[in-house]
Image (cartoon, one colour):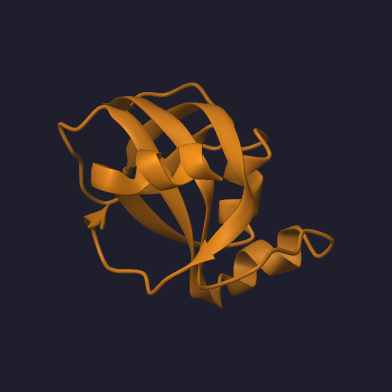
Length: 119
């Protein structure tokens, strides 16, 4: 857990609704669709928002995960509009993610809009 605490010192974070957050940390979903882009690249904490995405829950009724917590980190490697991932949605910015690293214990915290700094 000490590695996780030191990793949080200036870690960027993104709040994502469930079940998408769980799918990102499971390494199943490799693109997060956003209406905006960022020039940031590097480690990114995935915070599971307090609310769920109803369409996502209908599509993945067996995927459950905690809410209101940071689940772990992924690596944000690119932000493009033309990803060939099956998760990419037309017209959105595709945040291309890799190397999911779930934390052993989810970290409870309040999420925020946009890209934010965890501590």
